[in-house]
Image (cartoon, rainbow, N blue to C red; front, side):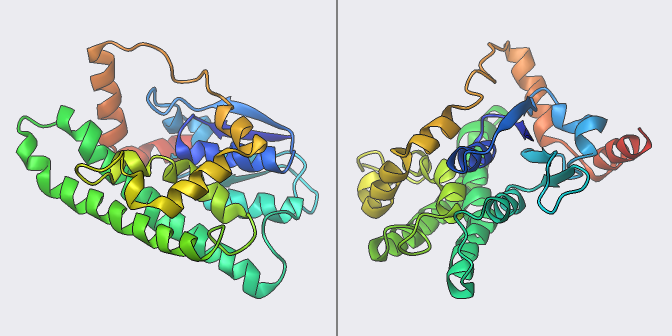
Amino acid sequence: MIDVYFWPTPNGRKITIMLEECDMPYTIVPVDIGGGDQFTPEFLRICPNNRMPAIIDKEPLGGGEPISIFESGAIMEYLAEKSGKFLPKDPAKKYAVLQWVHWQMANLGPMMGNANHFKNYAKNMVDDESKLEYGQRRFIGEVDRLAGVMDTQLSLHPYLAGNDYSIADMITWPWAMFLNRLAAPEGSDGGWDAYPNVKRWVDEVGSRDAVKRGQAAGGDLGKQELTKEQEEARRKLLFNQTNESVRQAREAALKG
């Protein structure tokens, strides 16, 4: 059994989709990132970066004591190795997959996260929205560029790494399905008309039964109604961590 430390975000859903695709039993352990669960000593012992997802595998690859893994890319590679699925053994094909896995981790995920922040969250944190214009142009423009990278690749191949569905698709899909919201050119049909090959791929991957189950997992989490004051408190918690606050939390976790 695998414990998945999870909240219903694109990064969390990468893992539940992979587990459903591999038919691996798992239990969701909620990590309310707006409520600060990621800063508790219990979670920091598993993930020193105070970000979900993370897993604990109680029957790990190779046997022995339970192991914990953080960072969604590392988790996906581990699950692929353990299951023997969705990551080819042939070196050329394997690294064709892994280069797109790392592309998502280093590029699409962070850029979409920053674009979403400047487009949807930061306006509640400044007194003059004109201060956000450069950040919005920078990150929304980069998301548009990355969408073009994907669209070109998917015009040549059915899946990101070639002809076979892989962890590259699973790790990218939960983010890419929102591209039409974050990179939509003015006057376009929700953005998808600019990225027709990405749209084809988003629909095809999203039609898989395991993807539907993984996307729905934990769907009841995070639906509580919050007051304006609660929303403000959560924003301060999420966006105001410092070297010192993280260091103190980590030291407390190690002493526990």
